[in-house]
Amino acid sequence: MIKGIGIDSVDQDRMARIFSRYGQKFQDKILGPSEKEELKIRSHKFQKIRYLSNNFACKEAFSKVLGLGFRKGVSLKEIEILRNENGKPYIHLSGNTHKIADRLEIKNINVSITDTNNLSTAFVIGE
Image 1 (cartoon, one colour):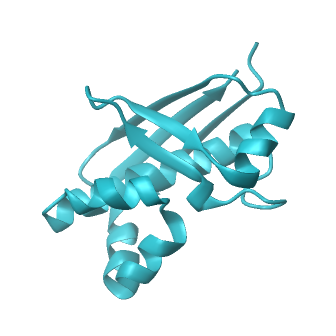
Image 2 (cartoon, one colour):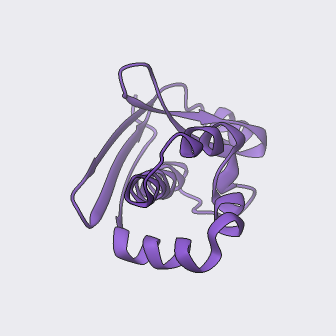
């Protein structure tokens, strides 16, 4: 049974400006530990911006699945957007955000991310 859906788009140029201005501070604010490790293996700035944009769009979409945005205990760092060995994205939750998803009885999370040269879009379904 579908408990919630969410969609979000992020302008990659805007993400590039934020990343250029705040760098590590921005990464520390939005990324969980496993995401930071994944970001390190991306060597070019374009790859880093794309990764940050895609993940941020997915985090926003998931916050809409919960119906809370980033309020009432939902944390960007507790929503990690990771990839399996085939590159398929999935969401790993931790901390209070995980507890909120459990309380809402969200057992499965389906993720789709697409991007162009300047736009990242994510669609998330919570079941």
